[in-house]
Length: 264
Image 1: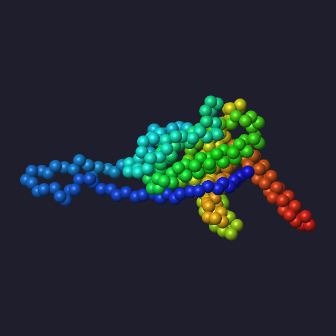
Image 2: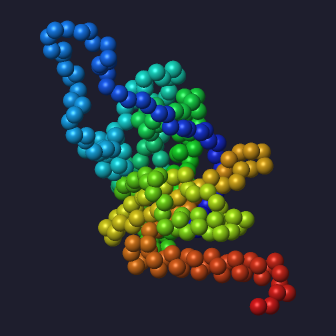
C-alpha cells in the first residue's frame, strides 16, 4: 500500500536568473555648480532582511497557494486553455476540488521563475491531475482500514517540495549504502494532505512523496508515489506498523509459493 507506480509523460523545467542594480546611472550625471539631484534610492539605508517573494497574506488557506489569474503571462506566445477540470476528490459535502487550468498552471510556473515550453503545459497539467487522482486512491485504501464510511474529504493541502520527509531521508541513505538495491534519487516533490472524516470530525495528515522511477524500455518516464499517514498520532503509528507487517508476511508467502521446498 505504501508505494504505487504511475506512468506519465513529463517535460523539464529550469529556473531562470536575474540581474540587479540601481536603475539610476550615477557615472553619467552631468557636472554642475549646483548640488546634483540625488538618487531616489537610499543606498546607505540599512538593508532589509530577505523576504519570501510570495505574499502569504493573499494565500488560499486551503492549499497555501496564491490566487492565480487566467490572464496570459508577459511574453506568452501561445493561447492556453482556461477551462478547469473537476477532480474526483471531495472538498466538502457539496463540492469537489478543481484542478488549475493550463493557463493558471503556466502562470504558477512563471511566478516561481521556471522557464517552461508553452506547448508542453497541457501535457504537464494532465500529468499533475493524473498523479493527484492516483494519490487519492492510495489515501482511500488507508482510510478504509480505519474509517467505515465512504465520505472522506480532502480538507486542505500544502506542497512542500523543498522539505524531505524522514522516510524519504531514510531511503536516500539506504540508496547511498546499497545503490544496487534502493533508489539513489530523492523525491522530486512532496505534498501534505489533511483528510477529514465527517462522521467523527477527525482530521488525519497524509504525506505523499513523488519519485521518478526507472523508465520503460521505450523510454517513457515512470513516476512512483509513496502515500502514508504521517506519524503524528498513535492511531497512525499503529496503522503504519500493521501495514508494514502485513507486507512482510505477504512477501514471505509469495516466496514460499515460488520455492515450496524451502525450509526456514
